[in-house]
Length: 198
Image (cartoon, rainbow, N blue to C red; front, top):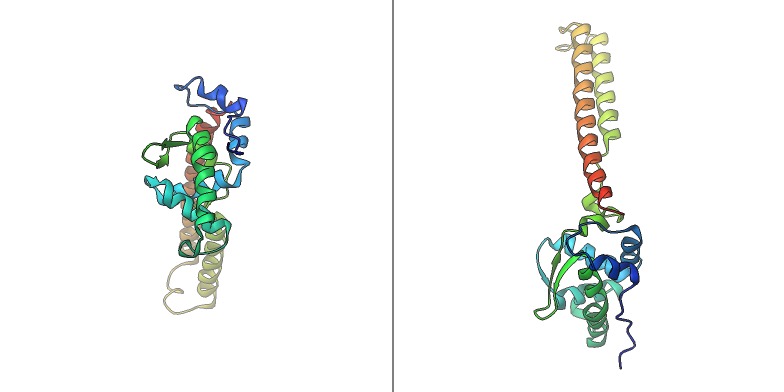
């Protein structure tokens, strides 16, 4: 008799009753994310960007948990993670539409609802562009160019200061428009994802 709880929480079973619905409640999302192994499954699948086997997934998670290399794992370390993934974590994630888990073949891939969980994780794939660096760099370059024009540096002093200032302002306007456009697109993506959360 196994001591592993394979029952699904009510929040997840409520979601699985309606398979055509692409929404998840926050309760389900946080239920799934509260377990470190499920977060590691998600991180591994995001990095792999393809179908993986249960064996390779279990090995990598066991290596992370034991702070060692996959080749240095003992069979007990591998088996402990493998069984927990097989019996508990992957079925829960599959029922919530986070992964597609073929238990018979041992194949796992990300499913449609995975993006709803990724929003809550601190992953490199969701690191936003650092616009403050662009603005700071442009400010420094603009100050250097204008100073060079005022000090009479050859080549730059031949260009009128008003033209230099105009180029710098145009560069700031261009970066600002791109920044607004990127933020608007990002906001649309976030709002679309949030609309799928109950």
